[in-house]
Length: 179
Image (cartoon, rainbow, N blue to C red; front, side, top):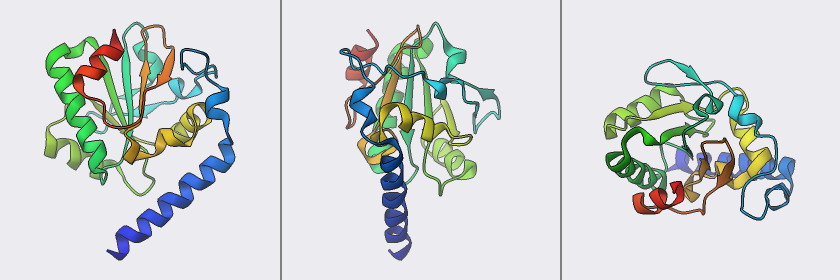
């Protein structure tokens, strides 16, 4: 219980600090469609797939839609969102790329690997390194790393990105977003 409380306090302080550094940029950086108008530097930050060890960037997937989820292993809402992503892949296969990035600074590769093996998830999972989460915050605002809000960014085939509504999105809703 003490460990959980400490984690909540640390997470709050982390998110508060990020919000101070990002200000109120979220709405100011979006056009009428909800897409971000910033540069998308995060698309070129190298990530490592915790299962395969292969390095990749979001920009590597130009030409295909990408669902980018920010999550934490301890988060039950994230688990529900991941179950919906798994259902989506059962239906649409590899026509969409999914990437889940653990943005909790207290979690590491081994915890994420245990998580994906436990639930048999088979898309790319990475742990935030190299400023990826901060770059997302710079573009979309602090809520993009607030795991319990189930943040998902949709990147279309042309690499245009937009933050989807918060909360768990069903496989059907995700499929509609992809159309």
